[in-house]
Image 1 (cartoon, rainbow, N blue to C red):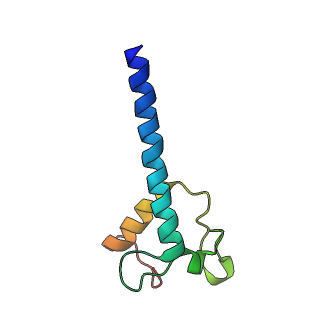
Image 2 (image 1 turned 120 degrees about the vertical axis):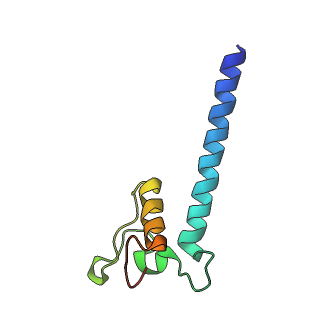
Length: 85
C-alpha cells in the first residue's frame, strides 16, 4: 500500500509541475518575455497561435513544448536566426 501512495503522490507532483510550466508559457505567450522589449508571442503568431502565414509567422498551436523551447533556445544562442525573433 505504501508504494501505491508514493506513485500517486509522485504523479500528482508531476501534474502540478506541468501545470506550472503551462501557466508560465501562457504568461509569456500573452504578455512577452522577461527581456525588455520582448513582444508577446501572440502579437505575431495570433491570439490562437495558428500563425499568420501571409506574413511569414508560423503556427505555434499544437506543437510540443519541448520543440518550442528548443527553437527559442536556438534563437537565443544564435544557432538559429531570424530578423524578427
